[in-house]
Amino acid sequence: MYDLVVIGAGPGGYVCAIRAAQLGLKVACVEGRESLGGTCLNVGCIPSKALLHASHLYHEATHNFAKLGITGEAPGIDWEKMQGYKAETVGGNTKGIEFLFKKNKIDWLKGWASIPEAGKVKVGDEVHEAKAIVIASGSVPSALKGVEVDNDAGVVVDSTGALALRKIPESMVVIGAGVIGLELGSVYARLGAKVRVLEYLDAVTPGMDAEVQKAFQRILAKQGLEFTLGAAVSGVEVKDGRATVSWAPAKGGEAQSAEADVVLVATGRRANTEGLGLDALGVETDRGVIVTGEQWQTNIPGIYAIGDVTKGPMLAHKAEDEGMAVAEVIAGRHGHVDYGVIPSVIYTMPEVAAIGLTEAAAKESGRKVKTGKFPLMGNARAKAMLEAEGFVKLVTDAETDRVLGCHIIGPGAGEIIHEVAVAMSFGAAAEDIALTCHAHPTVSEAVREAALACGDGAIHV
Ligand code: NAD
Image (cartoon, helix red, strand yellow):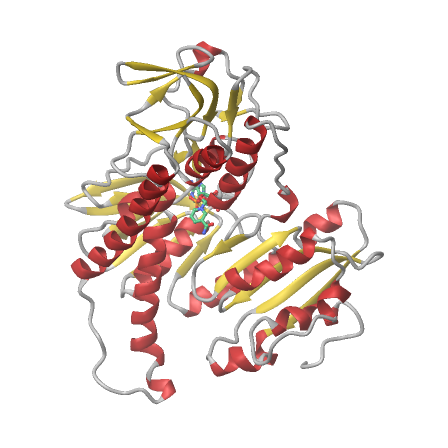
């Protein structure tokens, strides 16, 4: 009998298993993939970051080195080797989780799990008893009507297929200007593909601050990505290894088409509950998402759910936090996640990072809102790096000066945002950030300047 069986070894599941084992519980984790780490480590965050890193350096070498006075023959691309580097990066990380499982005496139950009844988890022919079960089965790409994804054929692909194309396409159509579409679209644009993005809405990156959306689209367009907004894709046809995408203006108008070697379907992900037997068990779901209460409990006692399979942003670090917290709860301790302070990052160049409320959402909440914005054109470090296109924008409560949100476009935005995360966790005012000494010259100084702009004014503009 296990104290806890976790279903899924992604960032939510493996963190939950490790934390529970550290707290003295007897833990098993079920995972059907050949390696641990879930979507994030195997076919998501980690391999995409490897390709983003490699393609960024290639782009720098071919586009920006000359501006810095670095001359010489331009480097080429060995795609097989780049894929090998990506695989090594993934392997190193997944093996790391395997090591942590062994170190913490967690049993890896290899196979796909179902829950025949509360307190039991079936893996293959074996049934394991568990005092508590945590479902952390993640998400899968959602299907788009009229579009058949075939990752093996490599013409119409989802994010998994796009990470493993056999060759760099000459042309690519990306359906959906969300995080996946823009990160992977950037990779192939940097590697030389002509990339066109078709997006249903009137802006890129749904949910982001409107000023960030506009600036981000402009910056990516300068890098060569072509955007068609307000375009509803209705189907893709493949003929002789080439794809034709059918689309029409979302507000009505004539049907149009776009051709490409590869089409990336990046129109969102859905909770992965297939095969778990949730309906028979009576686990409450809402449009496929598992409904949970305050302590990540489902409506069935002893069964919990965390991460992408539940509500909230589909982010690895949100799942990790929930995994740690639910392990604490199951071990009889207190678990907490501050849902108002979860950063989100788009790992393009420049990076985009956001936390808390957008200006629009803060206004909708009925508060009096003040914003402070600082352009990186006024930041010496960003200028020296030739990466001064972005800005930092702080959203504050005009009455209390409390920081409600922060939105950054710029080099290292995904690192810089954590200063604001800590500030928000402590309920800081913009003035607290403004009075904190920041090292010079750093891009982080722009956060302080944005905080100063919430008061009497920034210094360097
Ligand atoms: P998304 O929801 O971020 O974006 C999908 C986009 O597709 C939307 O803008 C939507 O309007 C558009 N769309 C939908 N149907 C369309 C149609 N028929 N025609 C044209 N456009 C259409 O989804 P995603 O980019 O696939 O990402 C999935 C999830 O994975 C997200 O929750 C994301 O947060 C997560 N993710 C995060 C990261 C990161 O944090 N860096 C990276 C990858 C994925």
